[in-house]
Image (cartoon, rainbow, N blue to C red; front, side, top):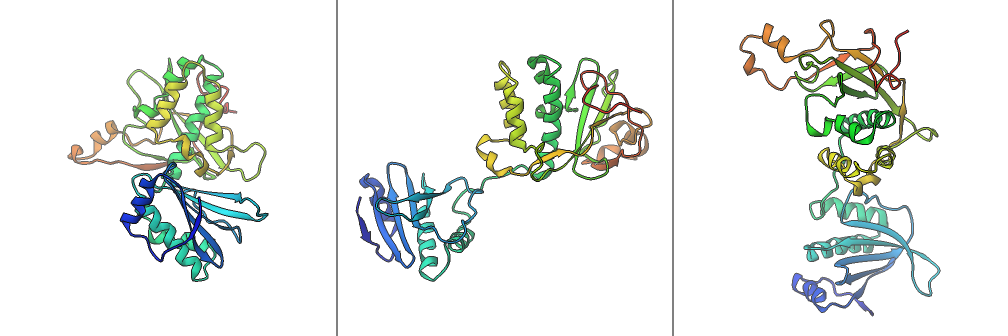
Length: 327
């Protein structure tokens, strides 16, 4: 592979010709700072390398882009290597590289050149999508419960009890009761209830709201991230791993996006259980039917309930050791 002086601009036909040729081609696109673009047909990839100066650009949110530090033969310097997956988008990937090179020639730093080019061509590459903060905290709460139950029940029973990924009425259905797990990062036990059925007990089955408080852990040794928790639960499984992975997939989790979830958490307090009985302040479909005229026209009920100062209850097994016992 030889390096050639780079023409001012390659048209779509020329870019396609390089990919059809099958052999890597490299072009020097900037002399100060030195920058080289490589077209690699075998990997369906374009790469731009330039001496590693300044801070790295943030590219982890883009599924088609990877940033590495590399060494070149007979060169003691470190280089930034920005690689772009050009599958089905040969020319678009080339346009991104050309935009970065133009920014470098204009005196921009590598970080700024990449950031500005990505901003101007943000529709070029599919941006990776994180779960919302609310979904992250909710999943953490359910996984903490599941992790505990796996220490009490066999894995098939524990996974079968986890109903959250199946969009059922409640998050867990145990042999003698149901549980709705609510997780908050606030100092109060204040939880968002997303529908008029979440806290409506199934006839003949007690329902407990399991209140979980978490907080950001920083560098605390006992801290954990969402990927850490998923890895911990998965390590407990032998025969139910496939079912667990399917459940995570239904919730929008992708192992390939684990690096996006860097925040570490820890429990703020011991979880508490609240029996959802006639005195519990729940807005349910049944209660709305009794007081709201033309009830069928009311939809999308969502509200917040603060249980901080409500009396909490003993949680039935298998959550008795997970939740705090009343004093």
